[in-house]
Length: 330
Image 1 (cartoon, rainbow, N blue to C red):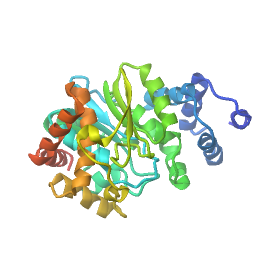
Image 2 (tube, rainbow, N blue to C red; image 1 turned 90 degrees about the horizontal axis):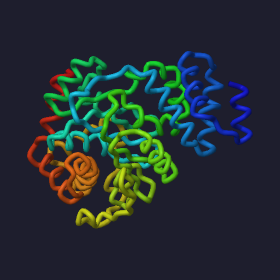
Image 3 (cartoon, rainbow, N blue to C red; image 1 turned 180 degrees about the horizontal axis):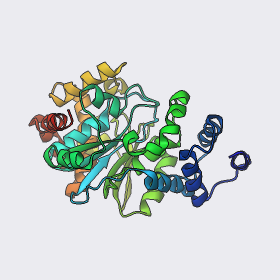
């Protein structure tokens, strides 16, 4: 590792194969915590290359516990996190709204690292038990329309890195990798990213796959459609900058989509929304993000997809998906 660190400090980059092998060696406990921490830190100080992130991605996919959901046409909605905006759990709630609209979802998620309450934190608090049992996951996506893939259960090789990431408490390239390493290998994906550089990288990496995707980024640095600014969407066919007006909405104040100050308060926001007791701004942000997945899967425009998302929540179907999943995974 010392030679690798010297090269990186001298502004050299790694090949895809080198990147892949280093991550595999990290998983085999070949390096100490200081070396791993230094390796992670370097990538916080300079941009990661397409070859490096693709190598890391391949390593994690090779090392993970695979999930076979091939009989379903499903989508993953997973943001990178790392935007330090402390919003409520937008992509997680949106996943249930999308499931409630009749689309199958395999949600990849984890505990919060740079946020107060990640996807797994809130779902665990609300009574979901995480599993990597393939039969249970199939039952969940079949009956509830959604299954949750809690990353640590599928990437055991990365348990060495987990305490180091937690101690650092800031985004690392593992934040970048999360949406790229869903163990069920989705053919459809909506991913929020925390800056334009990463958006470009994701586009290059996903172009190498057969995934149908929407990458989203709000121009005031949210890794989701925040409705606080214009937002950019890149997919297999186009690259556009859009405004909330695409949904017939106005810009909102960032305070309107703030998350809870604890897991308990975050869970309260989560359930208020699913029970149709959220604020207008919270609901519209959820509908907008859900629309990016619905439009991808149903081949319809964003405003139609927004209305489909609204109906999923208003009808109680999103809540029904959540309750059904909870009953299966209790």
